[in-house]
Image 1 (cartoon, rainbow, N blue to C red):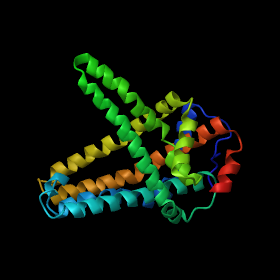
Image 2: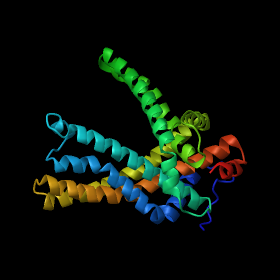
Image 3: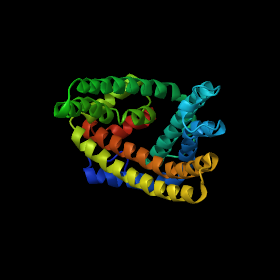
Length: 278
């Protein structure tokens, strides 16, 4: 088993949180590659459906017979992606905590209803916060820009405050509302620090996606020749490969952040409480 102290024995600095993220990622990426790739494949199912119907965008199906099928495929894709992402989180947690791996997919499936409820609550909160930004368009000029920036702050707060909620629900199974409350409680007092950690992590992911998007663009330019099927297949292969490597990094970041904030906010008995509920 890898020698990773998880949960960490003490609160970590920003650099140490990122170091823990890379350590979890390094020891778990191969083991999680299948789940992550299947989750990425699920995300591409709507695109495959569009390509099969000769459409480049969902809007092109509105007048046709495939719009209902597209909606159904999209829902299935979201559910499958959620399950496989949950399996990645659980496997990484088991590896980092020095536990035996196995059964993660089944555990993620059992927690699926609660995870869907959690995502619906988050979506409602984000929609409400985003609606506030619309009030800025009642103004004009610099006042509109200033108002939009101020009104966007609640949206930013929600995005950061709920960051740990899915990890909480998977690692310490609980109800959606309780997961949201605990995530907000952990983030309280650490908002800007966590924002910095997530910004750095986001930059790493952007670099990964930018580099692979450049490769995909080159391949499409050489072999695509405007063929929708070839373009879709090329993008799918590249996208699945990238997500297979990038998803475990994002989930490792969520585990590192959760471990740090839990120790920082909830004391040294975290390991015993997680072990009792996992």
